[in-house]
Image (cartoon, rainbow, N blue to C red; front, side, top):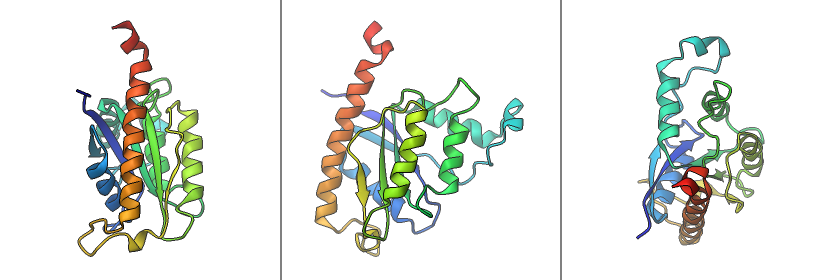
Length: 191
């Protein structure tokens, strides 16, 4: 039997009716052998290295939640052809202090969401650039979800069958990727 892996989900939108959050929840319901926990980022103070001597409690909580996860999933909208500032701040907070990044070696995936047709292409690629630098082994299959405002009913449930099938397939790939990366980790080889 395959072990259930814990996945920290970082949603790049703070909006109350966020389609990124709706998509993250829909994905969580469809992905096999993965348990998802949305890690909130809206309360994180802006990264400032001067605060590292006594880091804010929100930074400590965030870092602990990411570090405790087996993998990480980013679900984000696109703002001005890039990632939202709140998401970039979360990435920076998790990457510090230098040499103690909670992202290092953690398998990941990116899903970008947009009301437009290209599904947040710019955000997806900018986010991937940061994550590659932080040594997050990313699932190479890219996931863009366009026309997102029409995918959910008034209760926030995914109603588009094509998107559901895509997310289910992506979930299978992500679960396999997480197992592959965790299986290749030095600690797993030494055991």
